[in-house]
Length: 427
Ligand code: UD1
Image (cartoon, rainbow, N blue to C red; front, side, top):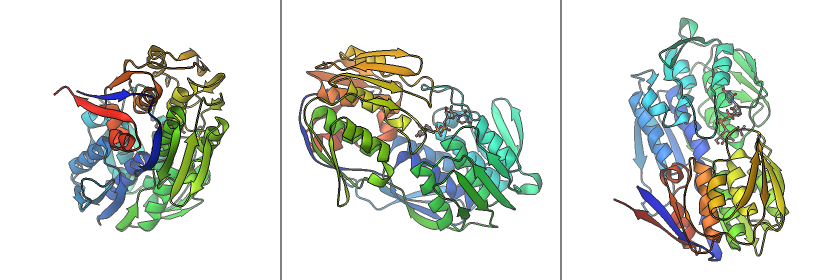
């Protein structure tokens, strides 16, 4: 298995190209099931999860063709053609490895009038139920049955009628599933307390490009007028605001001056505000964002919240930076109940973090030391990479497959701006 080796304390400077957003890509790809015409997605990141989702679409009968971009370029163009859906089932083996697979439920049901999708089960960062996905689909008219770990959904007379649903808590995934299912419903639908994440806006824009009728894009009330059919489209995936935020954290923890090329400041308000509060210089520049920092960061109080609040996907990376802050920080995780799995690993590198329930108190230390570490999820792994960039000596991060799910060519991007980082393979 691969490991990443980092020898820390190099200053970082230069340009980091920001890839297409993983979390947008994984909700745009299932849109292809909604039409028998091709959907071409540009700026798709080269990630294990994107490949995995492509395989799932292949199992459902869609073809996926990757065009053109040279191996040394970032991003890809993929054309997905679901002329016919030959299977309406997402099997356990795929869903348990990639939770985003649940996002085929709404589209398959909308297209075929029935779908059978494995229930995903547990996850390293928390319980992560899918009850809201199912309740929203029921409100749109789906009939559900549960057998042998699967949910079987049916649309009466082959087509969902549409309906109204108010989410009791904001859910990104459930909003996505409901939106895709509502796009071709027989009537109109209204989703209240819907998620407003930029990835939801990206999904809405792609659906509109395919012929969907959606009002209220970017607000907590989405009104969808079902259309008889959607057509093909070409759509570019938005830049990855979490990847951009992670490299911004790299500039702060290692010290330096990075330009995040392609990042969109308009979608990163809470992250940029937190970077500024830590003392970083943050400015919009043509085509991206520049982040510069020297010395120890200032401590912070941060609480994760749905967009436009501070993203749960940035919590672990900020904790790594705050481990070196000049004072005590308090982080509160409100989205997931078990998202502090990086804390014991950061502690092995010298961080002083006390967790009590959903709150973590981070007492800044003057230095971290390299160590062999591993993490159980994607963003936690990135927090260890960040700690390694600032630590004295060598850090070895194992279980690199987590990083490969969400960071396109991480070690290439970081070494190009001055980090001493490489991938080692045990064969
Ligand atoms: C969540 C994050 C998203 C992040 C992703 C991966 C939020 C609001 N969502 O999206 O930013 O990119 O994780 O880290 O920050 N819930 C239920 N029942 C459901 C679905 C969700 O109770 O059917 C709960 C979850 O347990 C969680 C909250 O709702 O406490 C938000 O979850 P949701 O937004 O659905 O999760 P993801 O779509 O995975």
